[in-house]
Image 1 (cartoon, rainbow, N blue to C red):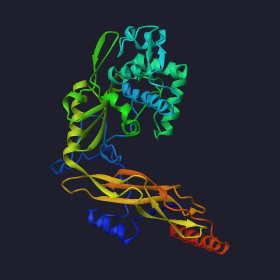
Image 2: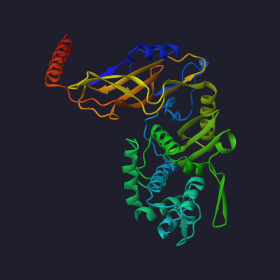
Image 3: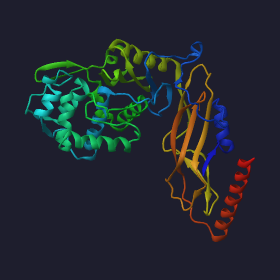
Length: 408
């Protein structure tokens, strides 16, 4: 059954007290807007129907508004097409120097005749993967996406299946795709939360390839086009990622910038025009950089607590995160931070060191701001018959007691 454990041990408690944090039982509030209250205390709101602001390294959420609402992602969905190609490059399945042919389908549906965003690749021309990725990232080329899909997977539909599978692998639980470029299709649905998660993944997993999104211009077929991201010219440290527009989805943007060593990711969607889109994204980023700082709760591999073990040669197991556990807090010190270790337990022995056991969840002012996986810090072997019998009797007694309480 699920166990919800608070921090254990004097060392952990001392660390949290020193950091000015409060640890107490808490459950996430189901607010549609986080960060939009008490503007006099540093809060903010936005005209964007859906929005999220995330600290890239930890995934700490600074602001959200209707962040789980599924909408048409428009050209922002091209980030998923890029991820599939980046992943194939990382695995060595393809190379940047590989060349794909621009089919009549790619040219007609995504090229010059289509009237949409295009890199203007000529029909039946041969273009390298590197150049097609430039066309995708800088010019938002619909022809680039179709050509990459056909060249890598054989057809756009086969590539879309890879997008769907890969999305689930990287933690996008609700996103669906009908094509590779975000052109209107009823199956194209993503939330700003999952677009933000995808952006973080691209930034952290493919740092060299991510640089494509920050390039200011690209020339193909003797046609020079500027990067469509307005943040690159208006915000210090901006270096990505994608804009998007369809009638169904409205104007949207996934943006990222680095200032003073902190990287933030913003996603807005559903705005009525391009100027409002740019202003909303920039305003959220500027607010985040001005008002927040990172507070580290635990270092990577530091013990953050313990889980109960069933049938083992020891009754508990130390838990750690593979990455630092940090949360962005407001500089004015007004935030209330609560944290819990959550796992299904007791954990049945044997347990191998490195097994994923649960997660640490951190709430800021009652809203879930961070969730980081926790892993076993040590191996636990199977206990003796006597130990296992004792654990079984203990769990039976606890179950009966809990059942009795529930009936009261």
